[in-house]
Every structure is written in C-alpha cells, then in structure tokens.
Amino acid sequence: MREPKSDAARIFGERVRAHRQRLGISQETLAQLSDVHWTFVGQVERGTRNLSLHNIVKLAAGLDIDPALLVTGIDASAVPREERQPSEADRIRSQRQAGAKPVA
Image (cartoon, rainbow, N blue to C red; front, side, top):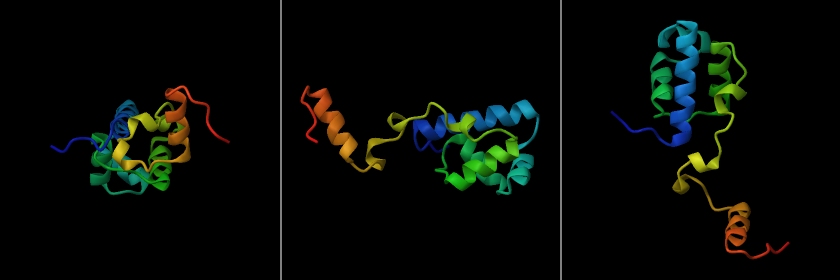
C-alpha cells in the first residue's frame, strides 16, 4: 500500500473518512454525492491523492459540511519541504530563528 503524500493529505483523508462513516455511507455513495469517481474517494481517504480546491469543495458538499471542517488546523508544516518552493516568508522565518531582524 502506498504511503500518504504528506501529513496534510493523511489528516484530510482521515477527516473525510470520519465524516463519511458518521453519515453511514460508502465511498461509492460519497463519490456519487460529490460527483467524483469512487476510486478517488479511496485515494483521498488513504492520503495518497493531492486535491484541488474544487475537489475539496465537492467532497465537502457530498458530506454536507463546510469545507473548512476538512482543512482547519492543517498548516504548511504538514507539507513536505521538497514540495514547497522557498519563499520570502521562509527567508524571514529563517532570520527570526537566527535572531536577526528581517530587512524590509
């Protein structure tokens, strides 16, 4: 079995599964309600799929919940470093950790 893409994908998938199971519906039913393929739902729940905003919204609609419930609290630390491009924010964080004041 494939490993989750990231902690973010794993956490998101766990939340989708928990909401689906609370509703007492199958992955196939959720897929139909969300207008996605049933194999996609399985991949999401296992954390092996990286989702677009549209698919997050579709899954939330299928679960009849606010999409925020699926992503709240997941931050950049849950995404592998190699998948993020260094940004100005990264440079500022590095400077702060080193005790230097950021240059404006």
